[in-house]
Length: 72
Image (cartoon, rainbow, N blue to C red; front, top):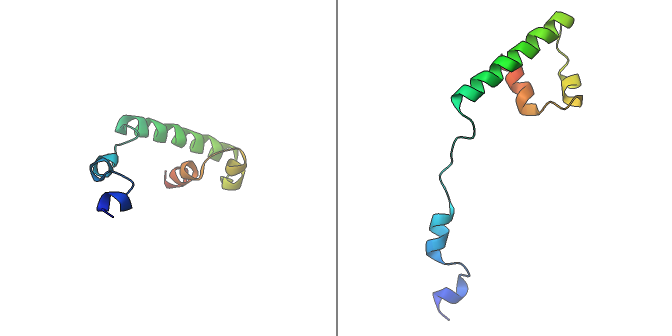
């Protein structure tokens, strides 16, 4: 039994299957998103002294967005 029988995939195809990781968002769009989050945070602070992150989770904000909001 040859090596080709043991490996169901072609070796050259496996080498090209992994594409380099590319950036999902441009730096400009990330900065714009941070400005929007900062505006949300400022608005929430006007209404209440403390931001209720649990309420934001219940309202559908993602964990990643809440973490970014905390850092601002």
